[in-house]
Length: 411
Image (cartoon, rainbow, N blue to C red):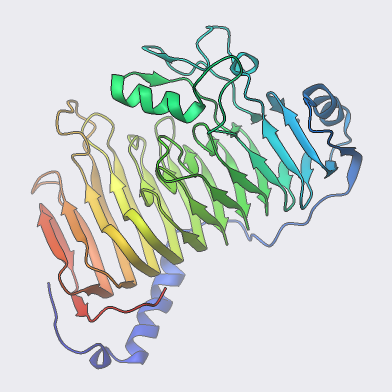
């Protein structure tokens, strides 16, 4: 599996041919996605720095389909907002939309939002798009979840609650920032999403989602702050996005329905838990292309994780043109994410291709299949790893070679 020969011997023509074939046959978003345009405004609002929930929601609810509510200037503070079908929210450059620090505004009726509890899912999201078609969030402004700000009437922040829940092995009841459910053709364009109390963006049971030029930035010390989570969704494009967070930079899941036809292109990941598939993938993940990705200072790089309690088939996945630096686990394919899991939802990973991967610093590479009957099946083309790395393979059929490089300061 290891080849210590010079990279020059591989030949440029051969490398280009391999890349071309993979590019044409790999699964990806079936749509022809181009850079979005911001729709015209139906109403323009100026922020006062105070609570503007009612003002923003009234404007969204009365807006004409195909147009946006334009937050023109200032700072807006708000409780939960719902974006209707066909409507956009335009947050202009220099504008900040802050999630209120009053946990009661987000409570679902269980009176547990803003608490650590044995119950979970007690909070409504900050921004909801449910059963919509053609809705979106646009502009170069900022959505600030205020995760580190003390909650109204309390001595703790959302992030303090998350840490307490981890210590107590209970649940943090913190809101997601953007929740998209059972929808079509939703767009996030250019916006910055920061300081999430919980997940940044969830995309559930949706056909057609584009995140283009989006920045996600939450401190790496935070818990359960995934960047973008497509779950049971298809025809997804995540392009030119920058993501730093305390959990998975992207996590593709498939608990209620398959996730497929997904493209992640030209993105940059800082600290986080990586470009992940899992953990809930019992309905299967397929037809994913990750192309031209730079990752640095991260726990994981390219990760597929599950176990027998929630596993399924992951297939036709291509990683191409990936550069990593200071990543602890550059590649980790794990079928025993929980060592104590039980059940018959067996994880199976096959048709996984790594092409033109360069890892500049030493790390651990893990291919941990479930059994000889259901091994990991992966192919390597021009995979270069740093000297001093460790390579562990169990129940794995790996085709192709990796090469040890001298490392460098690229990426």
